[in-house]
Each structure stands twice: as C-alpha cells, then as structure tokens.
Image 1 (cartoon, rainbow over the protein chains, first blue to last red):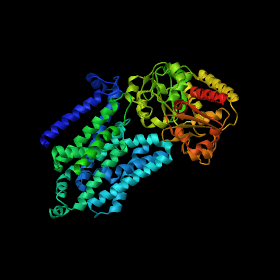
Image 2 (image 1 turned 45 degrees about the horizontal axis):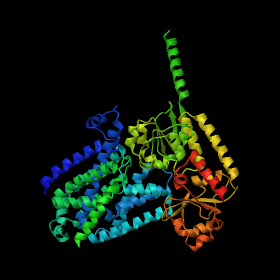
Image 3 (image 1 turned 90 degrees about the vertical axis):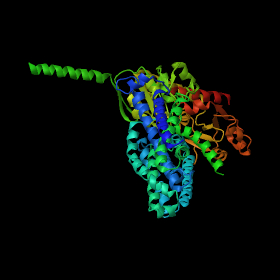
Image 4 (image 1 turned 30 degrees about the vertical axis):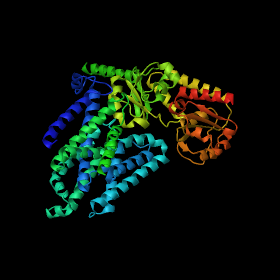
Amino acid sequence: MNAQRFFPLAIVLLIALSLANLLFGAVSLSLPEVWQGLFLGSEQHFTVYEYRLPRIFLAMLVGAGLALSGALVQGVIRNPLASPDVLGVSHGAGLAAVFYMTYFSGASTDWLPEVALAGGILAALVLWYLCGVHSSAIKLAITGVALAAFWASCIDFLMLTKPLEINNALLWLTGSLWGRGWPQLQALLPWFVLTPIALGLSKYLNLLDLGDDCATSLGISPQLLRLLSLAIAVALTAACVSICGPIGFLGLVAPHLTRKLVGGRHQALLPATMLTGACLLLAADLAARTLDPPIELPAGILTAIIGAPYFLWLLLRMK
Amino acid sequence: MLISAFKRLSLLVCSALLATSVQAVTVQDSKGPFSLDYEPKRIVVLEFSFADALASVGVVPVGIADDKDKNRVLPAVRDVIGDWQSVGTRSQPSLEVIASLNPDLIIADISRHEAVYDDLQKIAPTLILPSRRETYQDNLKAAAIIGKVVGKDTQMTERLAQHQQFMDAMAAKLPAKASVQFGVARADALFLHTDDSYAGGVIQALGMQTPASDRDDSAYRQTSLEQLLAINPEYIVVGNYVHPSIVDQWQNEPLWSLLQAVSHQRIFQVDPNVWSRCRGVMAAEHMATDLARIFAKS
C-alpha cells in the first residue's frame, strides 16, 4: 500500500472506530441517543459526553503519542525492534508511580500523573547522564535496556515487600483508560505542541538513515538531531504514560506496522504512524469495554495480547 | 408597609431554609462533609461491605460492583437483597452501567475509587468511605454513617447494638485469649491476616487474639512455612482459594508437623471469600458462627 491510499483509509477507519466507541459499551446506544447525549439535559449525557467522548480523544492522543515516540526512537536508534521502552521511560514512570502508591498510600491519587511524569523524565536524564552526548546509538540502546530492566526489578522488589498495594499498582502498570476524562485530556494536550516539531524533523531523520558520516557530510549534526528527537520521544512517552499507565507494545507495533504499509520515508511514516497508533488504541479500548460487560479490562492487556505475538514473530523473522 | 412585607418574606424564606436543613443529613465521609436532603431509593454500592451495611437495615441497592460473580456477595446479604444489577469489578466498575441505573446515591471506597470520585459525583451524590483495608472498628463506623445517610439511623443503631450482643454471646462460647491466626492460601503463597486486618479485628472482638510476631508491618503478610512456625499460633484458620494450595503442599514437609496447631489438630478451613473479601456486620457474624462451630468440634 502506498501513502496516498493509506491516509484516506486510516482516517475512515479512525472515524469508524470513534463512532463504534460512542455507540457500543456496557450499554449500547442508538445514533440519535448518542447525538442527544452530546447536549446537557439528556439522559445519556454522562455516558456520551462525560465518559465516552473524552475517552475517545484520550485514546487517540495517547495512541498517536506513543506511536510517534516509537517511530522517532526507531528512526534514531536505527533498529526496528527499538521502542520507547528501550529508553526505560515507561519503566521509570512505573517505578515512580508504584513507589508513590506504596509509601504514600494515604496520599491523594490526584498527584499520580505528576509523580509518574517526573519519574519518566528522571529515568531519561539518568540514561543521558550515563551515555553522554557523543554516544553511539547502540550504546544508548543497550544502556537503556539495562536501565529499564533495573527499574522493572525495583518495581518487583517494591511489590514483593508491600504486597498490600499490589492490586492498585498492577492495575496502573497494565495501562488503562478507565476513569480518565476531560481533566486528563486537558493535562495531556499541551504536550502535543511537540508533534509539529517532530514532523519538522522528518527530512533530517531520513538523512540519519544513511549513516552518521553521510548525514554529517550532508550538513546536519547527528548528535544534535538524535538528542532532539529522543527528547521529544521521552517527553511524549512520559506524558502519555503518566495519564494512562504504560500501555505495552503500542510504541513498538504501531510504527513497525506502519513502516510495512507506507515505507520508511519519515515525511509519510511519522503522521501515518500516529494514525495507526490512534486506531490501535481505540480498537483496544473498544474491545476492553465490550468483551465482557460490565467488566472493564485494562486496554493495556489487549494491546499486549496483540503486541507480544507480533514481537515474537518479528524476532523469528529477523534471524 | 413595604418594609414589613419584606420582613415577612424574609422570615418565610428563613423558615423554608430551616425546614430543608432539618431534613438534610450531614455526615463526615473520607472527603469531608457529605449532605443529602432526601431518602435515597436507588443506591449503587461499589464494595461488598457497603452492601452488607445496607442489607443489615433492610435497604436494597439496585447495583453492586460484584466482580460479575453474584456468589461473591455474602449469602446472608444475598437473601435480603434478592437480585441486583452487576456494575462490574470493584477495582474498575463500569461508570456507564452505574449511570444507566439512574442512582440517587453511590457509596464508593476511598481506597479503590478516589480517582473516579469526580466522575461518580456527576452521576449521583457519592458517599466515599473506607472499605478495603478497613479494620473491624472502621467498618462499624462506616455502617453507622451509611445508616444515617439512607435515613435508617435508629434501625442501624439498634442493629449495631444487636451485633454487639451477638458477638459477646459468641465470645462467651469461645476460649478467651486463645491465639487464632487466619490466613488465605493461594497456589503459591500464604497471606496471614494480622491484628490490623478485618478478620484479625473480628477475632479480637470475640475476646481472642491474633498472635504477635516480631515483624511489625502491614495487615496482610505473605508468610513462609518457617515464618509460620516462628509465629506458631495455637489455632490456624485457613481459607484456600484453590486446591491444592500452598498449605496443602506444606503438609508433606517435616516442619509442618512441628506446628502446635497441627500436632493438636487445631487447623481449620473456612470460606476464603467470606473471610477475606466480605466485611460488615453480617460478615462478622458469619465469621463468628464459623469460629464457634470450629471450636465446638475441637
């Protein structure tokens, strides 16, 4: 499929999925009911306007944000198996969140996003401090993986020593859109001013694909470009994870799938991957709400169910 | 003339205001003062302990977060309530199902539902109280508050007094100061419920005690066989979530026979769902009856 056919198709799919998310759930609504629900005074106002609508926007933003970060990291590290998880950002955010939940169990959950955000950014700073500015992509990836494993083991340690808090922590760590609404959307939206900057980097990211030496001779600074793209990826991932928890595999699968469909040119890849990410998370959340109502599964479980086999398949094919 | 009319009007307004404020109940919940100026008819509860409190004064909720498994609700509570609509899991209840029930009161748990408190408030007035991790005493206080809010203050006071009498009567049948340890066993772990836990509180309310251990920490503690032997309680009460559980496996180990509860055959099985998930006046009475039956046999 080429880019010209991908974009209209993806947009149609996105609209269809949004509509399905408005119509279906534990309680199915008809189209007129959904329309009335948008206005105050309707019986369905809470379900449609306060519950499903913000959740749809949030799923789009988080899906697009995580997918874009994934594409940026894959472009910079030049390894299709890389993802924001490689940088240890989501694990760092997870550690901060679990630490907060265990040791401040009386504290308000209102601060959880801020704590997780700080944890994610701190984890990225530690990685930066360890690798320095002039490190190669492969050193960055390996250090990142090692750090991520370290944060993950700290999370396990906390959960083993304080089993009481396991339930809440595990729920957060699987990633879910449950109970997120307009306030969370408001908190997340400002971070997306970074998207135009990321899209503006597309041309230079293509040059980076030719290798550092070529890129330098073509007039760009690979180090600076790498730093800038990674900083954007880290900020977007940390912001998304702070709201919804680390939604697994999305940052890996979405860019990879998109690269297969539209090719590796970043001008097409970056916006296309955002659409794919948004569609994937919308589909996952729709399934999470409708598979076994009134039980709400965490959307992160659904993305992991799709993502993990895909990752294995990739690994096997790369041999 | 005009002034006196104004005075009369303002008097009227004042008395009208007073009349409504007399009807309104105000209680302190986990988020501060909570007021309700009507008797709620359609109540949704998001933890089992709240369903227990309502059932103990004969109030029937329309929805319960029952993890989509009606058997998790205490049988005695089920008998009072009859049928209800499940609103999903206790950890992530479905807000759209709650909204579709058009409730006029929601009772939520501060530990599980604080993050969606604002959303719940948009659906209906939400009373938020401790449930998960609450102690026996916390639960009695929460029940008294729920009684006030649903307009059954006198009935609840009577019911709590009756509960106290029941527990005292049961305590008389049970050996005073015996050390009883309750734990839930999964396939790979045993969690002891210490004196800070709900079950521990019930055991204390019955005049017995949960054994002290050298480790001070949380209400629910994962324990190995060696640690259990170090505590060495006189009586062990186990709720097995699965069979074979870790306790079943331990029975083949040499250390197991060294436990005094084992050598005196004072190890008993109870329903893990009632003992670990259910809390409330009726649940405590169920536990007390279990213990009385166990001790009558031993």
